[in-house]
Length: 217
Picture 1 (cartoon, rainbow, N blue to C red):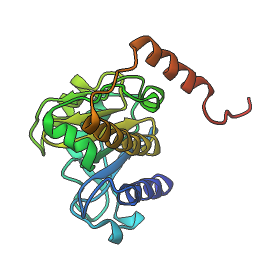
Picture 2 (cartoon, rainbow, N blue to C red):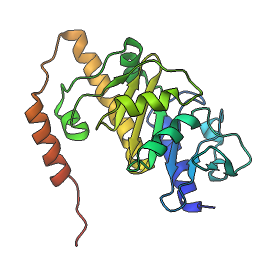
Picture 3 (cartoon, one colour):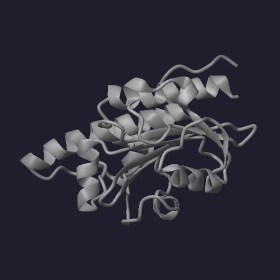
Picture 4 (cartoon, rainbow, N blue to C red):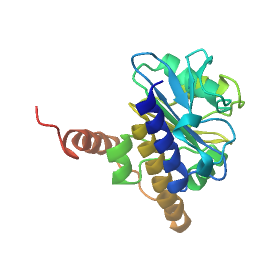
């Protein structure tokens, strides 16, 4: 079932340790199939080195396992709540990446100090209130606090990113950690100046419209 998407989710999960966003078995990637509304997610507690496409678990939006012999991630309820309340989201990532999670531990958002952040995110990376793991509480807080951002820091917890696909959500997770590392290092030396809101909006619009290759119509 959904073999291509299952393989895509498997590949995107492998990007997490490859980019040093997770340790051991922590973290997860999921994707939603637009036609069936089924969600494919990493199984709970499995080492990334041992993962295979066949290990990915297929569930419906209520959490019922449709296909797969393994238990889905303990963060499944968070992923599902996001999918239930954001029709534009078809990929969700959760990590405990070090630099970004250091801001989460402090309950601090990351202001727009860098042009790369203006381009990619179009605003600050928000922080959500503390919420209990294993229930819909984290998903509810993400929906309440994430706004237009593709990423959010959850207080005392870690990072969640969303996107139109699993790949887009993984890219956001990689960019969050890269930006958080640079900002962390900058703050050791002083206090950077924030980029003005209007300039952030201009840069983000230009990035969306001009960056990368466009398919021929």
